[in-house]
Length: 306
Image (cartoon, rainbow, N blue to C red; front, side, top):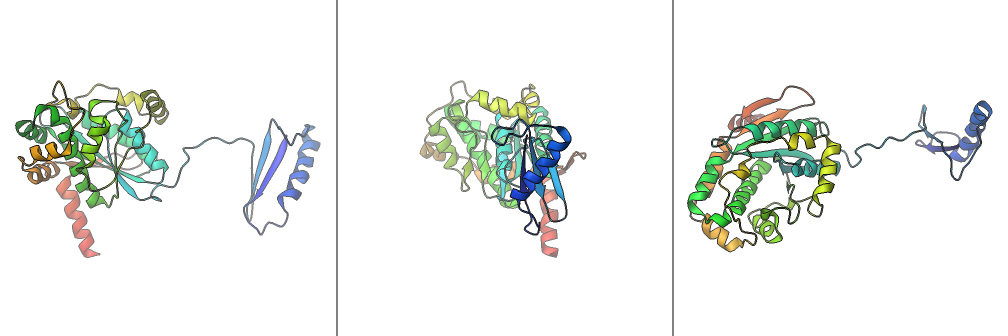
């Protein structure tokens, strides 16, 4: 065995060089154990604080990273899939407080994906203890896109609208970047060309923590998080609504802007936000759901009072 002491407070009178042999001798006298300072099978760690000492012989890995909020706030697009919860957790580990935004297919699809997103947000809330999930009905907006845009471009235009809506939410929440679970070339919308075309619609940075990972690596992290079994439950995701058979893999922003110019884009975004719900999640308590307008009108009033 070996003893390793670290002084956490300079007021502790003895140095670690004095502590280690003195405590090691006591242990050896009691336990009759041999000492091996170069390759010990057991290491007794001692943290010497101002008024006490903590001793332990085992280190259990935690999630690691930085304290939540130390790096600011971000808005994460949270689908019901495997990737986006892992991306959100990675940002939490780098000290970001994460606001969640989920797009579901109402009124044309059921709310199954919204319920699943709530379950995933509750798991992630265990890492930041106090979360807000925006549930945005996206079906009507998708139908408007279908009426105005070429079939092959629809998926990328959907993503561009998701980015714009999430940016509006980010502005209300004081978030400085968006986060997605995209992994390069995993699906048609995640080619380099399409990701660039989506990013062209954004004014905030889009962070992609999983961009260079393969699916098996992401699945392993999802299992460790505890989100994998929920993510693979079947649901009616808005990404399956009004999707063409052959989506474009090399979209160009100039053509997408031309298609979008035929749509009342701001009106479509305003309507989607007005119909959104906000789910307040807090450390295992029952989530509280309110309308988007109700939440933000109250916050505007509170800000005026201050």
